[in-house]
Length: 225
Image (cartoon, rainbow, N blue to C red; front, side, top):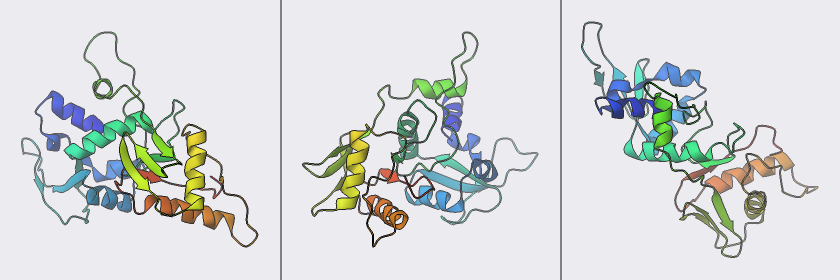
């Protein structure tokens, strides 16, 4: 969708002329809950396309906010564009792997359009245009164990008024390793607790009650990281 924005900005300026189809996004691995999350977070807008073959341009009609008919198409909002551009910088750490602490409303799907090489001559590809618009500094979260505060790009994300041993242990592990793509479960084993369930519950807690909900943590699917 960020590539579609680049096309629009180089031509008509109308994002809807380059709206991305539902089936294409699903082919990248998105689920209906991903779409609901993005809509509720005000990062995307969607409408149902009603364009006919004889029509010039594209035409759409509104639908319910959380309903996605067969010909639904999506565009990024201004907020979504800003956030997606940040995601392109921090979602990979130079090795092509998604970061386990990525922007909250950026689900783990597909490759971002920020890594294409620029051509020596001729028109620039849209992915390069998007790349030029990116901030050049790679942003990572910061965990301050003294203040017990998680920040991202200078913005407070989560603050702990009371001790939360498991959550703080995970954040400390990320901080010590400079926020890699993945960390092993840092929680010490406990005889009376299921380690995988405990890690899953900890991840859920990290995503709850954020002061500014701009980070989203997720497991790697093994229950061990």
